[in-house]
Image (cartoon, rainbow, N blue to C red; front, top):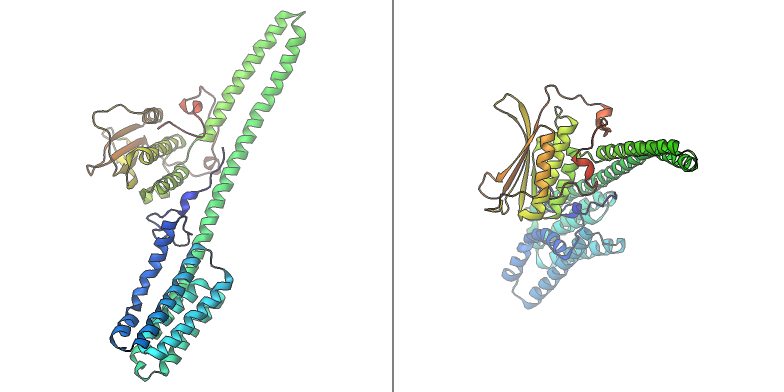
Length: 435
């Protein structure tokens, strides 16, 4: 089973709606991120107002409009290319130099309201330059603002205080934001690496188990086949006995393989929750996950956890394929039944089209899921969502009287006791129950 890259990490969700630290994957996302950065250009309303109200000559208006357009274009070019990760090192310093020159020239020729452009220069320097340089460029930009303002008598004290402090504060705030983005990228890369290593470890475990299970059996089958072939002409009864032994060994090997595959496929709630998040993000569905599901449950045995994990996979698959929903809630609660038994309930609610009217027949996925839960002494309930719109799936499994203590053996999938293979042994390790 091949490990697929987590492409959905680049999709926006409720935890990262602005895609901070993520490069846009298409033109629409690139425009959206640029628009978020362009919103702050509303602070340039002061220079625009000053241009059309306080300056009456055509030369001043032409110079101000041309300079402001050049400043905004350079600023958006730097920010957008930085967000897309395509800003080369050779463009950073010339771009910041152009912004600084325009700030100084426009402020000295058109007046104090144009000092606000230094704030954008400080923010741009904090975003595109590394920390070892931006920590000096931000105060240096502020000092240039103060120096230019000192040359304008009407700039003191209102304009210098109104623009100087935000210039310094905004720059260092953006430095902090860039540090958080860098940390987020490292964390995302570390999580993907952990997932990749876990998948590799599981593949190694399966390869090791299959080798240990089949190596001896296949060697014995080969040996007995050769022996039966030599005995067949002269001693047919002994050859028949060897053939019966071959049949017995091959049947036992088939049982061992099924048990190994069943142990390999036993799902975990944490793993299925990560897959559910990725699937919902890819489908454009906002996921609201109960914190109780994130923390796990100590009183949940392996079989019951596997049944709930299958329920989560099937429910999310149905939401992605059939519901047309825009939001999905995943809840985990404890409930006491009338027989004084304690159950754990996994509920998956969406705001989609809901169950089809007049068609109570369930698909293979829900039927198989109902059987899985029944094997774990649980049950499945489906129907309309509580809000009157959408579909609700609730899977119940009993909780043991005493919590299962965490141990290294419990942390790794174990091969179940020998016995007849259940439904899980006959399904593909790739697909799970059909939805």
